[in-house]
Length: 578
Image (cartoon, rainbow, N blue to C red; front, side):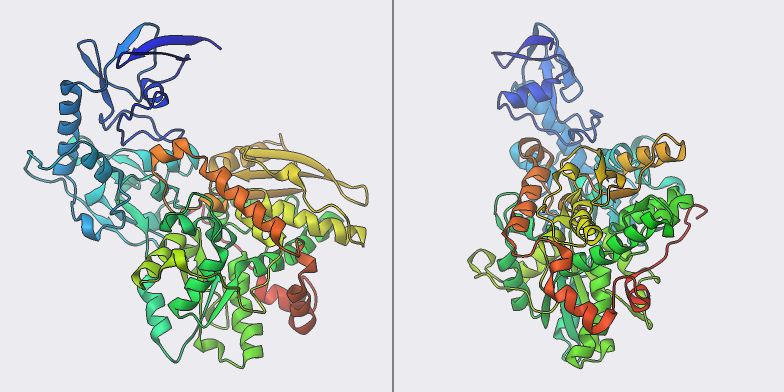
């Protein structure tokens, strides 16, 4: 590999050709501030906060490529003054109600201002016209806090290939949003929330349902049931100072009880239920009973992406509802019947790592007898807010366990939280159903890993081979779908998760700032904890979960039965013309 030598603040260093000065400085431990830069997402040098001195010139270091013999200064008075001017100008047009902002204490603009010791703003004058958009059920936009860094546009366009938002107008009138002044709800936004994860300030955040849930808990006539997704337990602790990826399953359950929920269930149970239904559907299609490839339907962002962009492929999507919607349906039918509770008095709350689940929960197709399967969806961040609001000392909580019957999930259910997890969970069950006996193999690691597209040919116990693809990130999904449409690729089974890494880095997870994400592999740390929890569980295959066996024996009959289809399956909408 070709390298170049340069000097930064008197320190000579050698870096690979193509390295930026910003990256080279950070490798030396020199903290050059930045706002618009986000590795792998956005590199536009639009904010100019990362300026450095190169001879007589002031240059943005995030796009300045290191060259042989360069001499860079990052800490001269000229540099510090320039950075202060840039940040003060940003602040002069920024809505500075920090105390009531969702990002207070975790705002990169706030952090840079503090680091630069800005105590006054010397620039006053008119502010740009701004708008607030609360039309989406998932994502709120507050343009008064937008600093026009472009990171959300990079996440939506460069990573997800959705292009729901972009820059409009020019100069002081520049805004970020959907084309032609439309709302997010009227755009092709898939509600994945990766724009929120990229935003350095509070210009984007989830639509909060905290007060709705508090109101339900306080109502003595309502029976409030909560369920938690696999990825929540490996991220929630970060909101309370734990290292990235720390498992806090028991503490999370204990906290939910203290918040006042009547029952605390685990979405892992419904992940096992999903495998029973989806695995049976896959076998049926492999035997000539439906369209191939079968594409997973667990991720609502991915489902909406197909509805907008590839409506001709809607029949390929599994008809299975996502796990938390299945569990919501079971809570308001099977559980209500067993408990003798009027299902109309039950309020179901899902704690999800995902903002798209908020949109999904409102879909008319995901209801039964005029009742939505899930009434409210809270993100991991919202759950943390509730715990803090209630004054619960999370770090000193003793661990607790989920309630039965829907609190018992297998290891296969847990791994739904990471990319490749649904495929592996399905294989654990499909292999044994086809073989007609229990097999020693538990882990199918070929579908694991963080490659954007993973392809494998897997031989089933009866000798048949199925071509599989595991995809995460909608940009990668688009490439795969277009290759299929061109006839270049063919598969029998495809798993897609909208968010890079899967649910572990969903749009509702704790936000890790751009600088920290360069130092810590968040996806790897959270995924490791997901697989560790899988290993620690006594049951690791969905079909061996005793509570899953019971629900079929007592209520559903068998996988893909008429009642199962009525309660656990759904249909989709062609949104391409909207």
